[in-house]
Length: 354
Picture 1 (spheres, helix red, strand yellow):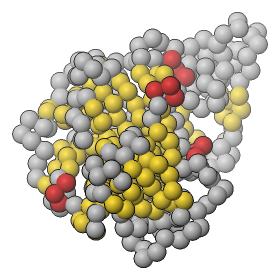
Picture 2 (picture 1 turned 45 degrees about the vertical axis):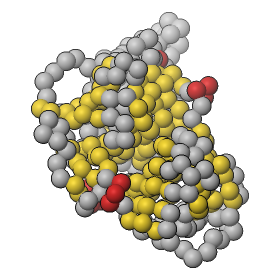
Picture 3 (picture 1 turned 90 degrees about the horizontal axis):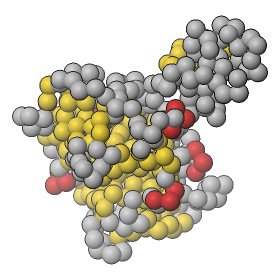
């Protein structure tokens, strides 16, 4: 036996207690998955012992092909040629009668199950500061526990300075291109670029072309307040010199017949948040959950966001909020596929679900 048995593709959600030893099955033959029952005897496989230092919720690998044992790293997604799809079912369409009233004039909200919702923004309602228009759309007031997200429009010129004391900040340009200055250091910001601002740093956004920039700013922790300083400091943290990453087709990773590229992650020094671009074909993903709190922005393509009992239409410019551990399925109905930008807390791999 040189290859492990695939116990199942979908990993296991487990709740672990401080100091208690757990033995993860490597061989895939155990009847007590994901834990060992001794069925590896007579094979070259040995179980892996894991002792948590604190109470944890984890996702343990069931396919036995992870490169980060005992934890799932998403490897199960590439054991099939096609990403797992959901079976047809009936849900109430909460968008049949529209998205409801504007919330604080900034966004309309289609409510799904357990605090999940879809937003449509009202650019006319943003607060203006010079050439910058900005307003929060995801926050504790709308049910988020860890993240806050702001919708931002930048006209020609350099925006006022911004900072969110005590928070890591992630920026994404979904329309237009320009630049960002982070505590005195300038970076180009082409279309579909993510940027990372470390806690305590000040930044501004530049629009050199005159084409309106549509951007999203994600803040973690979400209770950090927006401050507009009077002057730009020159205290850029040189311990992490790379701060931006642009979508590039040759940098994508595969997930069966899907693709993704991480833009902002722990490799760039961002400890709390991961930002990525995903590409999905015409299909409906199998229902699944994540341990992370997530915000999804639809870049192109149309479809449906499904939760336990209801569904909502989504299209370009729509924003989806998903609480941690909410069962959901994103369906793409466009023949050309769907592209999206996602950001989530805590940082990790967008390939991991259960």
